[in-house]
Length: 176
Image (cartoon, rainbow, N blue to C red; front, side):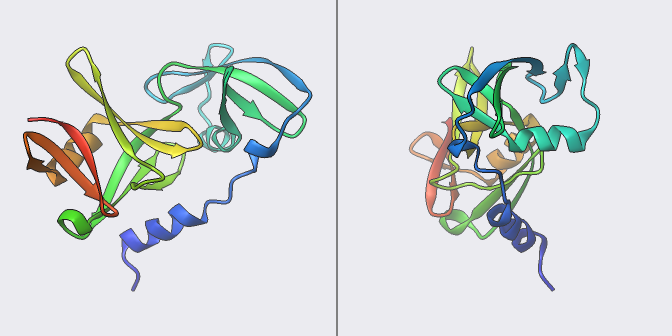
């Protein structure tokens, strides 16, 4: 029987997303869609409550030089994002120490294997850590506080820093 980690690992590699990076539509504009810092999506000031619709929009989201955009072959519509378009809401790991592998799950159904293509970065926000993981093509997920605490529990202190290893790569979570 396949365990949960293996199922998530397969899902991380199987996500079939539209090729938004290849689309260069002629029509460019703005739409009143706003992703708040807590991961909720709004249209014209009203929260989008249908998770399937949010998940669909997330598949056509792209970060361009002029900001975050929803992109189709026919149009590109700029949207507002407060902090990061996604939130990492769950974590699974297997292995130990430097052999550990970590998968983060986002609020829109992405499963991200933390490693060289999907690094964790921790920024300082007035003395408070703000951890992120790269999801795809410059799009990041803010790592929820409860998930970050679970990552901290998996970390190891080395040279005055808390390090977390995934796929043979160390990620610094902060100074100790």
